[in-house]
Length: 276
Image (cartoon, rainbow, N blue to C red):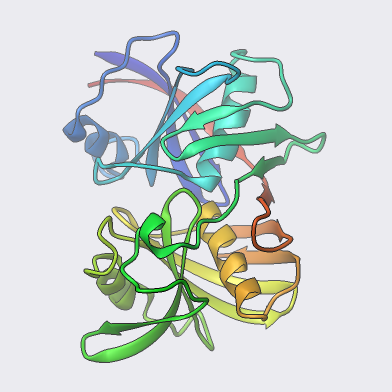
């Protein structure tokens, strides 16, 4: 099977984006892992599939697969790339589209400067819906990891996130502690882990250990979850610049019950075709 693809990234969080509308695509877990492999395949954090919508009043369906081959619910940097891809490929001429994901509808908007603004929906804070094992909803939870108690916030942006506040993200044990929290038994579907350093009420630094992938250069849903967590703890204002290893995102959240808005850049690296 030969497929055409585009290699894209949002702040270094990179993707193989595949048009599954104009070509037949049926990928196995092994083929997804091969595409994501940086030595033997194309190389990416996630594989994104562009499919026809299955619901009315929706433009497209969007599916996301991590580098380990597992399908996940949402990807913020990915949805920005998705929006630019369908425009650049002539699949739509709209500046604002409605996209069906495994976790619900998202609405990316292509801005005049080429950046993409996305309505990421209302964050989920109720533990069972994240999902996270806790008796009551709270802004902070104590998680025991290797006999050490760690304070986290738990948020779902269509996918689950645990957010920790650290003094210095460059010294934070992102890979080791991130790996332990990702598979913690209190997160039955595993979890993305954000390490957040507060620079001020409108600026944070963030590193994210993504489930099924490891640390990435940027994580859009992770940036949203971090701002939500910081707002719930009274540490951040409504508009926050999030500095990730790959660059900056602008996140806006007015408070509980309101949607989160994410704005950031998108880059197309190259187009190609590969035989699987």
